[in-house]
Amino acid sequence: MPPGDSSRAVNRTRWRRDFLLLWGGSSVSLLGSTSASVAGPLIALSMTRSPVAAGWVAAAGMLPNLLLHLPAGVLADRLDRRRIMLVSQLLRGTVAATLTVLLLVGERSMSLLACAAAVSGTCVAFYSVAEISAVAQIVPRERLAEAMATNEARSHVALLLGSPLGGLLYSVGRTIPFLFDAVCSFVSAGALGCIRTDRIRIVGVAARRRGVRALVRDLTEGLSRLWTDIFLRTALSVCTITNFAFQAVILLLVILGREHGLPSIMIGAMLAAPGLGGILGTVFAPKVLRKRGPAVVIVACAWVWTGLIAVIAASSHPWVWLFAWGGVGFMGAHMNVALDTYQASRIPPRLLGRVAGANRFLSLGAVPLGTLCGGYVIATLGTEGTLIGVVGVLGMIAVILTVRRPSLPTRTADHLAILDPPGTLHDPAGAYAPETGQEPPTTQGPAHIDDPAGAGSGPVATEPEPVTSGQFTRRVPSRTLFAAPNVSASPPARDQSACYSLTERGRKLP
Image 1: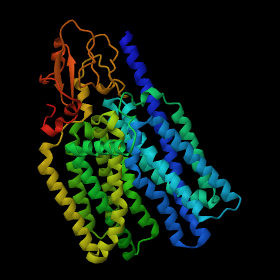
Image 2: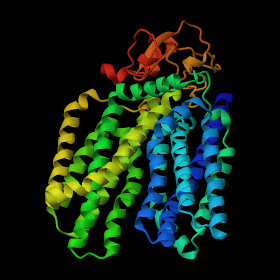
Image 3: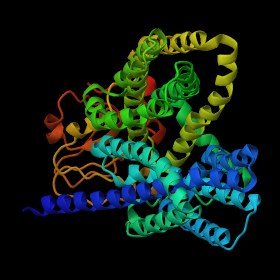
Image 4: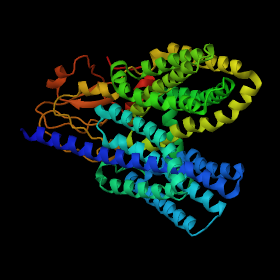
């Protein structure tokens, strides 16, 4: 085997190992946290016989996970992301283990339960933002869609299994769910400890700025990057509005189930249907995204969602509601994979934490607001009026997306792989980003990295020429231009922001 092929084979093995460690640790951690989140309100209810106390414990665990994504994103772009995840898991495991011991010795303090839930929610928020940023650095660009689909499937499976598992463990012993959460956290920390630190380290960025103004400036930079990208802005707007509207549909399904005298197991099956549909959707999402592109995916999601909610509104059969609501989850997986893949492939590593944090803050923040407002909307408009209103909102979104589709990007980073000549040096960790000032290692033959300045060209016999291929501007030898058909030559980009904002100018891949 030639030396270059051997090196690439080793790199493929290493990134797979690191990704599997991260994915496995995150899966175990999510399963444990979901189980503990179910047991907390149950213990509060058994102690006080008060639904209000149970609600406060549940809120204490949810609010940090909703409100802290923005500061978590700033921190993920300033510090070692692996260290953030490690500290989060170790702290959450320690809190869960301490709570287990205190409950066993007879401690019955509501403030203890609320504080433990709040600390756990805070750790989950910081871990989730650092994790999604780390995935983009570990996984090669051409495999991001599969990696994001795997993460999406993990989330659906953990949520489907974690809730009943938490109830089952609580029936065995009320401290068992927290002990299980502690074990899961420590197992996840062990997996993270085996990941190579150089894969997810941010180097050469202005992360040493201190003070409130610096933090505000960092946060503003991330929000600005999110807003100026037309696809991210459009997809995030769709996710936020639909997450808000779908909470009313969930309440409607419960109300309709009660009105039709459905058994509780059928109502539970309807509410679990989007999770099952989402797992199935992750199987097809990478292929659809690679073949059709992100713009087609989000437009198709809007139209299919409109049709499925219209089916629920027009039908009175519970099985129709179940399959239609499951279809909503199926298409939701496509939307999430498209958004996460685009975000991971187009946002520079030094900004990814802030963009991901803002994304999660806005999209997930719409869920509790939608639940709160949904009840008032149903009380005002009734079940039929509310369903018609949701269909109208989704239909309006679908029409707007269809009209705006020509301005959206038609390709993802997966398509850029076919333009890379043999011998391409990929740098998912971003270690040789332009802002670091480091020179990348050279390889035999033509090579390029994610380097808008074109600093990563290998040794060639002729003067390299600047070539633009969709997202990146790179320098390749003139003799390799025939390896990338339909690539037009253009002047080199003058700054980094221009290289990451080509979609704003309407420039697309052929």
